[in-house]
Amino acid sequence: MALNFVLSDFAKDLNASTSATLPGASIPSLTSGGVTAVYEMSTQVWRDTFQIHVDSEDITNNTVTSAGNSGDIKYYVDNCHNLNVANSTTLNWPATNIINPSHAMCDYSGSTNTSYGNNTAGSAHAANRMLVKHDYVRWLAFKLFGTAHGVDLFNNEAEVAEDLATQGANMWTQFIKYKLDYVNTQSTNTGMVADTKAVTVNTENYTTGNTVDTNFATNDGFSSVNYPGGSGYNPGNSDAVTNICKILFDQMASEGAARFQDIGTGGQTIYAPNTNDAAGNARSHTENYIGDSGYDRMPLPFRDGDTITFQITYNCASNQKDLTGISGLTDAAMDRIFNIKICLKDAAISNTTPNDSSSYNASYVV
Image (cartoon, rainbow, N blue to C red; front, side, top):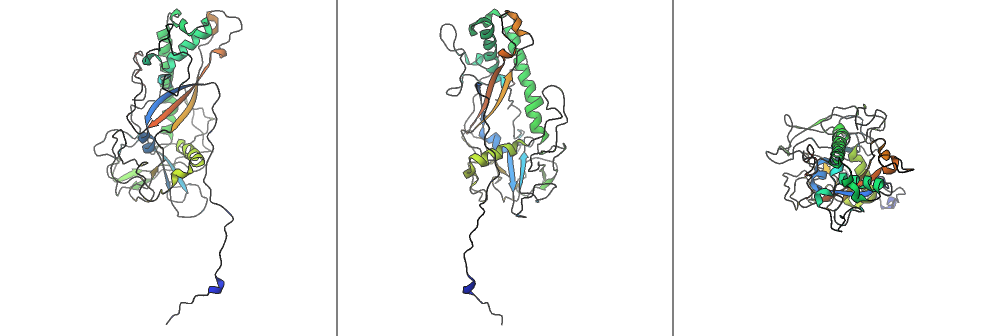
Protein backbone atom coordinates (compact mmCIF):
# COMPACT_ATOMS: atom_id res chain seq x y z
CA MET A 1 0.00 0.00 0.00
CA ALA A 2 1.03 3.67 -0.39
CA LEU A 3 3.02 5.25 2.45
CA ASN A 4 2.57 8.83 3.68
CA PHE A 5 6.07 10.01 4.60
CA VAL A 6 6.84 13.04 6.79
CA LEU A 7 10.26 14.70 6.33
CA SER A 8 10.78 16.94 9.36
CA ASP A 9 14.26 17.89 8.14
CA PHE A 10 12.63 20.11 5.49
CA ALA A 11 10.41 21.97 8.01
CA LYS A 12 11.07 25.74 8.08
CA ASP A 13 9.32 29.04 8.86
CA LEU A 14 8.97 31.43 5.93
CA ASN A 15 8.86 35.14 6.78
CA ALA A 16 6.73 37.31 4.51
CA SER A 17 8.36 40.62 3.65
CA THR A 18 5.35 42.20 1.91
CA SER A 19 2.45 43.34 4.07
CA ALA A 20 -1.11 43.20 2.76
CA THR A 21 -2.50 46.69 2.20
CA LEU A 22 -5.85 48.22 1.41
CA PRO A 23 -6.63 50.61 -1.41
CA GLY A 24 -7.50 53.98 -0.04
CA ALA A 25 -7.33 57.72 -0.19
CA SER A 26 -7.08 60.21 2.63
CA ILE A 27 -10.10 62.42 3.27
CA PRO A 28 -9.44 65.68 1.40
CA SER A 29 -9.46 69.06 3.11
CA LEU A 30 -12.20 71.61 2.48
CA THR A 31 -11.64 75.19 1.41
CA SER A 32 -11.43 77.19 4.61
CA GLY A 33 -13.98 79.80 5.59
CA GLY A 34 -17.13 77.94 4.61
CA VAL A 35 -20.34 78.17 6.62
CA THR A 36 -21.54 74.73 7.73
CA ALA A 37 -25.13 73.71 7.01
CA VAL A 38 -26.58 70.32 7.94
CA TYR A 39 -28.96 67.66 6.68
CA GLU A 40 -29.81 64.62 8.76
CA MET A 41 -30.07 61.37 6.77
CA SER A 42 -30.68 57.75 7.67
CA THR A 43 -27.53 55.67 7.91
CA GLN A 44 -29.60 52.87 6.42
CA VAL A 45 -30.10 54.77 3.15
CA TRP A 46 -26.35 55.00 2.63
CA ARG A 47 -25.87 51.32 3.47
CA ASP A 48 -28.60 50.32 1.04
CA THR A 49 -27.24 52.48 -1.77
CA PHE A 50 -23.46 52.04 -1.64
CA GLN A 51 -22.31 48.43 -1.72
CA ILE A 52 -19.31 46.33 -2.76
CA HIS A 53 -18.52 42.79 -3.86
CA VAL A 54 -15.23 40.97 -3.34
CA ASP A 55 -14.10 37.39 -3.87
CA SER A 56 -10.90 35.34 -3.77
CA GLU A 57 -11.08 33.90 -7.26
CA ASP A 58 -7.88 34.99 -8.93
CA ILE A 59 -5.46 36.36 -6.26
CA THR A 60 -4.27 39.03 -8.67
CA ASN A 61 -4.52 42.81 -8.77
CA ASN A 62 -7.01 42.66 -11.63
CA THR A 63 -9.56 45.36 -12.23
CA VAL A 64 -12.97 44.47 -13.61
CA THR A 65 -13.13 44.69 -17.38
CA SER A 66 -16.09 42.43 -18.12
CA ALA A 67 -18.96 40.62 -16.45
CA GLY A 68 -17.98 37.82 -14.10
CA ASN A 69 -15.82 37.56 -11.02
CA SER A 70 -12.47 38.44 -12.59
CA GLY A 71 -12.02 41.63 -10.61
CA ASP A 72 -11.01 42.24 -7.02
CA ILE A 73 -13.63 44.80 -6.00
CA LYS A 74 -16.89 45.76 -7.63
CA TYR A 75 -18.50 49.03 -6.62
CA TYR A 76 -22.29 49.40 -6.76
CA VAL A 77 -24.51 52.47 -6.50
CA ASP A 78 -27.94 50.90 -6.02
CA ASN A 79 -30.29 53.85 -5.76
CA CYS A 80 -32.77 52.40 -8.24
CA HIS A 81 -34.04 49.11 -6.72
CA ASN A 82 -36.84 48.83 -4.22
CA LEU A 83 -35.96 48.07 -0.64
CA ASN A 84 -35.73 44.37 0.02
CA VAL A 85 -38.97 44.37 1.97
CA ALA A 86 -42.14 42.61 0.87
CA ASN A 87 -44.46 44.89 -1.16
CA SER A 88 -42.15 47.85 -0.75
CA THR A 89 -42.52 50.73 -3.19
CA THR A 90 -39.69 52.75 -1.62
CA LEU A 91 -36.36 52.89 -3.42
CA ASN A 92 -33.04 52.29 -1.70
CA TRP A 93 -32.58 56.05 -2.03
CA PRO A 94 -36.08 57.31 -1.15
CA ALA A 95 -37.63 59.80 -3.54
CA THR A 96 -38.13 62.16 -0.59
CA ASN A 97 -34.37 62.36 0.07
CA ILE A 98 -33.69 65.41 -2.10
CA ILE A 99 -30.37 67.01 -1.27
CA ASN A 100 -31.24 70.59 -2.17
CA PRO A 101 -28.31 72.47 -0.62
CA SER A 102 -30.33 75.68 -0.26
CA HIS A 103 -32.55 73.92 2.30
CA ALA A 104 -29.80 72.60 4.57
CA MET A 105 -30.00 73.88 8.15
CA CYS A 106 -27.69 76.67 9.36
CA ASP A 107 -28.84 76.36 12.98
CA TYR A 108 -28.05 72.70 13.67
CA SER A 109 -27.00 72.37 17.29
CA GLY A 110 -23.26 72.12 17.76
CA SER A 111 -22.46 71.86 14.07
CA THR A 112 -23.09 75.19 12.37
CA ASN A 113 -21.26 78.48 12.53
CA THR A 114 -23.14 81.29 10.80
CA SER A 115 -22.90 84.77 12.30
CA TYR A 116 -26.47 85.55 11.34
CA GLY A 117 -28.58 83.60 13.81
CA ASN A 118 -30.34 86.34 15.80
CA ASN A 119 -32.70 89.22 15.13
CA THR A 120 -32.09 92.81 16.29
CA ALA A 121 -33.53 91.94 19.72
CA GLY A 122 -30.99 89.15 20.11
CA SER A 123 -33.53 86.33 19.77
CA ALA A 124 -32.86 83.38 17.51
CA HIS A 125 -34.49 83.41 14.11
CA ALA A 126 -37.19 80.78 13.55
CA ALA A 127 -35.76 77.49 12.27
CA ASN A 128 -37.67 77.75 8.99
CA ARG A 129 -35.83 81.02 8.30
CA MET A 130 -32.39 79.60 9.07
CA LEU A 131 -31.78 77.61 5.91
CA VAL A 132 -28.87 78.18 3.52
CA LYS A 133 -30.91 80.39 1.21
CA HIS A 134 -31.88 82.69 4.10
CA ASP A 135 -28.29 82.87 5.31
CA TYR A 136 -27.14 83.91 1.85
CA VAL A 137 -29.72 86.71 1.62
CA ARG A 138 -28.52 87.99 5.01
CA TRP A 139 -24.94 87.78 3.74
CA LEU A 140 -25.88 89.94 0.75
CA ALA A 141 -27.44 92.49 3.10
CA PHE A 142 -24.31 92.51 5.24
CA LYS A 143 -22.07 93.14 2.22
CA LEU A 144 -24.33 95.83 0.75
CA PHE A 145 -25.62 97.61 3.89
CA GLY A 146 -23.08 96.69 6.55
CA THR A 147 -25.62 94.67 8.55
CA ALA A 148 -27.36 91.33 8.01
CA HIS A 149 -30.52 92.91 9.43
CA GLY A 150 -30.79 94.98 6.27
CA VAL A 151 -32.58 92.22 4.34
CA ASP A 152 -35.90 94.01 4.73
CA LEU A 153 -34.49 96.86 2.64
CA PHE A 154 -34.70 94.55 -0.37
CA ASN A 155 -38.10 94.78 -2.01
CA ASN A 156 -37.74 91.26 -3.49
CA GLU A 157 -36.12 89.24 -0.69
CA ALA A 158 -38.67 86.44 -1.16
CA GLU A 159 -37.88 86.25 -4.88
CA VAL A 160 -34.13 86.08 -4.19
CA ALA A 161 -34.64 83.24 -1.71
CA GLU A 162 -36.92 81.44 -4.16
CA ASP A 163 -34.29 81.70 -6.88
CA LEU A 164 -31.71 80.19 -4.53
CA ALA A 165 -34.11 77.31 -3.82
CA THR A 166 -34.51 76.85 -7.58
CA GLN A 167 -30.76 76.70 -8.13
CA GLY A 168 -30.40 74.16 -5.31
CA ALA A 169 -33.15 71.96 -6.76
CA ASN A 170 -31.49 72.11 -10.17
CA MET A 171 -28.15 71.16 -8.63
CA TRP A 172 -29.77 68.07 -7.12
CA THR A 173 -31.39 66.85 -10.34
CA GLN A 174 -28.73 67.97 -12.82
CA PHE A 175 -25.57 67.28 -10.82
CA ILE A 176 -25.83 65.15 -7.66
CA LYS A 177 -28.60 62.76 -8.71
CA TYR A 178 -27.27 62.79 -12.27
CA LYS A 179 -23.93 61.46 -11.06
CA LEU A 180 -25.58 58.78 -8.92
CA ASP A 181 -27.86 57.71 -11.77
CA TYR A 182 -24.99 57.56 -14.25
CA VAL A 183 -23.34 54.69 -12.38
CA ASN A 184 -26.33 53.00 -10.73
CA THR A 185 -27.03 49.30 -11.06
CA GLN A 186 -29.53 49.79 -13.88
CA SER A 187 -27.39 52.25 -15.82
CA THR A 188 -26.60 51.57 -19.47
CA ASN A 189 -24.14 54.44 -19.75
CA THR A 190 -20.65 54.20 -21.18
CA GLY A 191 -18.17 52.52 -18.85
CA MET A 192 -20.65 50.41 -16.90
CA VAL A 193 -20.15 46.64 -16.87
CA ALA A 194 -23.65 45.24 -17.30
CA ASP A 195 -24.62 41.93 -15.72
CA THR A 196 -27.44 40.28 -13.83
CA LYS A 197 -27.40 37.80 -10.96
CA ALA A 198 -29.91 35.04 -10.43
CA VAL A 199 -32.05 35.50 -7.34
CA THR A 200 -31.83 32.66 -4.84
CA VAL A 201 -32.47 34.27 -1.46
CA ASN A 202 -33.46 37.88 -1.99
CA THR A 203 -36.69 37.29 -3.88
CA GLU A 204 -38.17 40.56 -2.72
CA ASN A 205 -35.53 42.81 -4.27
CA TYR A 206 -37.68 43.72 -7.22
CA THR A 207 -36.51 43.43 -10.80
CA THR A 208 -37.68 41.69 -13.97
CA GLY A 209 -37.66 37.88 -13.78
CA ASN A 210 -35.65 36.20 -11.07
CA THR A 211 -32.56 38.32 -11.53
CA VAL A 212 -31.01 41.36 -9.91
CA ASP A 213 -29.21 44.00 -11.92
CA THR A 214 -25.54 44.02 -10.99
CA ASN A 215 -24.09 46.75 -13.18
CA PHE A 216 -20.85 47.95 -11.69
CA ALA A 217 -17.99 50.30 -12.40
CA THR A 218 -14.36 49.33 -12.84
CA ASN A 219 -11.78 49.57 -10.08
CA ASP A 220 -9.97 52.46 -11.72
CA GLY A 221 -12.98 54.71 -11.09
CA PHE A 222 -13.71 55.40 -14.76
CA SER A 223 -10.45 57.25 -15.23
CA SER A 224 -10.75 57.01 -19.01
CA VAL A 225 -14.45 57.80 -19.39
CA ASN A 226 -15.93 61.30 -19.52
CA TYR A 227 -19.49 62.47 -19.05
CA PRO A 228 -21.31 63.28 -22.30
CA GLY A 229 -21.84 66.85 -21.14
CA GLY A 230 -25.07 68.79 -20.92
CA SER A 231 -26.76 72.04 -19.97
CA GLY A 232 -27.41 73.59 -16.59
CA TYR A 233 -25.35 72.11 -13.76
CA ASN A 234 -24.67 68.85 -15.61
CA PRO A 235 -21.01 67.82 -15.71
CA GLY A 236 -19.19 68.94 -18.83
CA ASN A 237 -17.79 66.53 -21.39
CA SER A 238 -14.29 67.17 -20.04
CA ASP A 239 -15.24 65.85 -16.58
CA ALA A 240 -14.16 62.28 -15.79
CA VAL A 241 -16.86 59.90 -14.56
CA THR A 242 -16.21 58.64 -11.04
CA ASN A 243 -17.98 55.99 -9.02
CA ILE A 244 -19.15 57.65 -5.79
CA CYS A 245 -19.08 54.26 -4.04
CA LYS A 246 -15.37 53.84 -4.82
CA ILE A 247 -14.57 57.31 -3.50
CA LEU A 248 -16.38 56.55 -0.24
CA PHE A 249 -14.76 53.11 0.00
CA ASP A 250 -11.27 54.50 -0.53
CA GLN A 251 -11.69 57.07 2.23
CA MET A 252 -13.24 54.49 4.57
CA ALA A 253 -10.46 51.99 3.89
CA SER A 254 -7.83 54.65 4.53
CA GLU A 255 -9.31 56.13 7.70
CA GLY A 256 -11.38 53.26 9.16
CA ALA A 257 -10.00 49.94 7.95
CA ALA A 258 -11.15 48.19 11.13
CA ARG A 259 -14.73 48.47 9.89
CA PHE A 260 -14.05 45.72 7.39
CA GLN A 261 -13.43 43.09 10.04
CA ASP A 262 -15.52 39.91 9.68
CA ILE A 263 -17.11 40.84 6.36
CA GLY A 264 -17.55 37.16 5.53
CA THR A 265 -19.27 35.95 8.68
CA GLY A 266 -22.81 37.17 8.15
CA GLY A 267 -22.70 38.70 11.59
CA GLN A 268 -22.46 42.41 10.82
CA THR A 269 -25.99 43.22 11.86
CA ILE A 270 -25.16 46.85 12.60
CA TYR A 271 -24.16 47.33 8.97
CA ALA A 272 -26.79 45.21 7.29
CA PRO A 273 -29.42 46.48 4.84
CA ASN A 274 -31.84 43.92 6.22
CA THR A 275 -31.92 44.72 9.94
CA ASN A 276 -34.08 47.05 11.99
CA ASP A 277 -32.35 50.21 13.09
CA ALA A 278 -33.32 52.60 15.86
CA ALA A 279 -35.72 54.38 13.51
CA GLY A 280 -37.58 51.13 12.81
CA ASN A 281 -36.34 50.68 9.23
CA ALA A 282 -36.82 46.98 8.54
CA ARG A 283 -35.14 44.64 6.08
CA SER A 284 -35.49 40.92 5.44
CA HIS A 285 -33.24 37.99 4.49
CA THR A 286 -29.46 37.98 4.97
CA GLU A 287 -28.11 40.46 2.46
CA ASN A 288 -25.39 41.73 4.73
CA TYR A 289 -22.18 39.90 4.08
CA ILE A 290 -19.82 38.63 1.43
CA GLY A 291 -20.61 35.01 0.70
CA ASP A 292 -24.40 35.27 0.72
CA SER A 293 -25.05 33.55 -2.61
CA GLY A 294 -28.40 35.22 -3.07
CA TYR A 295 -27.16 38.78 -3.07
CA ASP A 296 -23.37 38.63 -2.94
CA ARG A 297 -22.88 42.25 -1.96
CA MET A 298 -22.35 44.01 1.33
CA PRO A 299 -23.03 47.62 2.28
CA LEU A 300 -20.22 50.00 2.94
CA PRO A 301 -20.10 49.89 6.74
CA PHE A 302 -21.40 53.37 7.51
CA ARG A 303 -22.07 54.02 11.18
CA ASP A 304 -24.35 56.26 13.19
CA GLY A 305 -22.55 59.60 13.55
CA ASP A 306 -20.67 59.47 10.24
CA THR A 307 -20.78 62.66 8.18
CA ILE A 308 -20.41 63.31 4.45
CA THR A 309 -19.57 66.89 3.45
CA PHE A 310 -19.41 68.70 0.14
CA GLN A 311 -18.89 72.38 -0.61
CA ILE A 312 -20.99 74.70 -2.71
CA THR A 313 -20.48 78.38 -3.48
CA TYR A 314 -23.39 80.71 -4.07
CA ASN A 315 -22.44 83.49 -6.48
CA CYS A 316 -24.50 86.66 -6.62
CA ALA A 317 -26.31 87.83 -9.74
CA SER A 318 -24.23 89.82 -12.20
CA ASN A 319 -23.57 93.43 -11.14
CA GLN A 320 -25.14 92.97 -7.70
CA LYS A 321 -22.28 95.17 -6.45
CA ASP A 322 -23.84 98.19 -8.16
CA LEU A 323 -26.94 98.23 -5.94
CA THR A 324 -25.43 100.51 -3.31
CA GLY A 325 -22.38 101.74 -5.20
CA ILE A 326 -19.85 100.87 -2.48
CA SER A 327 -16.41 101.76 -3.76
CA GLY A 328 -14.23 98.73 -4.40
CA LEU A 329 -16.99 96.18 -3.81
CA THR A 330 -16.97 93.37 -6.37
CA ASP A 331 -19.46 90.66 -7.21
CA ALA A 332 -16.85 88.07 -6.24
CA ALA A 333 -16.69 89.58 -2.74
CA MET A 334 -20.31 88.49 -2.29
CA ASP A 335 -19.61 84.83 -3.00
CA ARG A 336 -20.41 82.64 0.01
CA ILE A 337 -19.08 79.12 0.59
CA PHE A 338 -21.28 76.58 2.36
CA ASN A 339 -20.13 73.21 3.70
CA ILE A 340 -23.17 70.96 3.26
CA LYS A 341 -22.75 68.31 5.94
CA ILE A 342 -24.86 65.15 5.86
CA CYS A 343 -25.09 63.69 9.36
CA LEU A 344 -25.95 59.97 9.38
CA LYS A 345 -28.29 58.72 12.09
CA ASP A 346 -29.62 55.36 13.23
CA ALA A 347 -32.69 57.14 14.56
CA ALA A 348 -35.59 59.10 13.18
CA ILE A 349 -34.34 62.09 11.21
CA SER A 350 -35.69 65.61 11.66
CA ASN A 351 -34.85 68.29 9.12
CA THR A 352 -36.48 71.71 9.05
CA THR A 353 -39.36 71.84 6.58
CA PRO A 354 -39.13 74.75 4.09
CA ASN A 355 -42.41 76.67 3.99
CA ASP A 356 -41.64 79.81 2.00
CA SER A 357 -40.95 78.43 -1.48
CA SER A 358 -43.94 78.31 -3.76
CA SER A 359 -42.45 75.49 -5.85
CA TYR A 360 -39.82 73.84 -3.67
CA ASN A 361 -41.25 73.26 -0.19
CA ALA A 362 -40.87 69.51 -0.74
CA SER A 363 -37.33 69.86 -2.08
CA TYR A 364 -35.35 68.70 0.96
CA VAL A 365 -34.43 65.54 2.85
CA VAL A 366 -37.56 64.23 4.58
